[in-house]
Image (cartoon, each protein chain N blue to C red):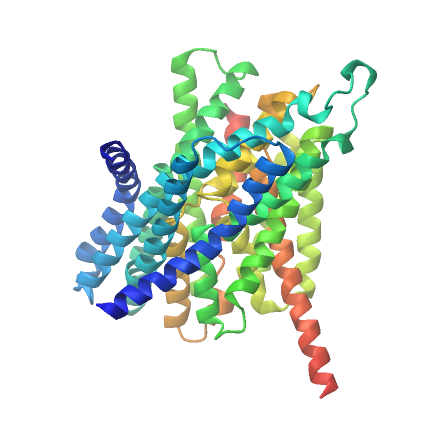
Length: 260
Length: 244
């Protein structure tokens, strides 16, 4: 039990160090520039304490339970011995579709980690608030999670085939630009934002492990050059999926209005 | 007391629901695909419990502390009417939250490794450290600039599309001239800069600013700060890779 407590205190300290500059900036400006007492200062401070404790518990739990398993699985799924179970590797020229379990894993792990991502929950709450309920918390979260899932699967495909990353990213940009002109104006800034919020605490460590595992085990790939880029995919595709979600709900809303 | 307990229990079931997909995915792959027994089962149950508890506290504290302070500061700056101070605040918030970001520190270390292997810098500890530090400062600086641009956009009511599309065009141009080794890292650095505490705070700041300035719509103008913060690092990191 004391080992768990020690671990918690260590994580808490690390989180505290991360939060310290932010707190210093906020309270520094509050007291030196704005020079007004914070309303409900006690409540805000308690809220900060909750955030700290919550984030530390969250990180520690992930480190204890999910990350080791997730990392191990990413490694095992990309291993040559798993891909060609029993088949002689020498007789088998490798084909991108041999890695189908990797794509399924990439898709499901991308989706599920995004659903649990705390910063996405925060943004979804805010968006729901600001839009007066038009944008549902779950609608946004599922749209973003689907985007990440597609992005990471496609990113895995890229690592396996070795196609240069910028072809995908530039094509993605073109799609985003086209969608921007057709999507409801209200959703555009939120969609752009959702690219950045998806990739923090939960997604990055697991996805990075998957990318490095793939680049290490697929013949002809270089860890240093091909191991990166999954995060970039995970931040690009939610932009498209959120705009698509808005377009779909607009279409559906339009149809219902016509039927009436 | 009893009500508080029920509320806590309720939000914990919510957190469990948020987490359930990950548990299912990992269990499925472990049992059906890889067909391996799960080692340290009790440890994993304990860890999962911590994750659920932590997520509950985090969301609770978010609505109690982070959102209100972000918004009240936005209101205070809007009322004070000092654009200079607001922009200085925006820059320090972007720079300060990014420079200490653990994900960024990790990525910078990886990047210095790549640069050393690719003979862009000398393969010594010293050269790698200075490269990694330079990269970190570059990214932090670019996030600071991004928040400043984003806040200016909210103040002026510029439309976001053209700015982001302009940014994309810059990224594409930079990609064609930057060294190949840096491109993957540069694209990734856009995603890793925005941490779990920065995102709610910056979102609250943007929405607060947009709702305290008349003529701005919080939905159309309030969001978008994070978008800038994930775009500028790509451009700056590629520029850094070209200069060094």
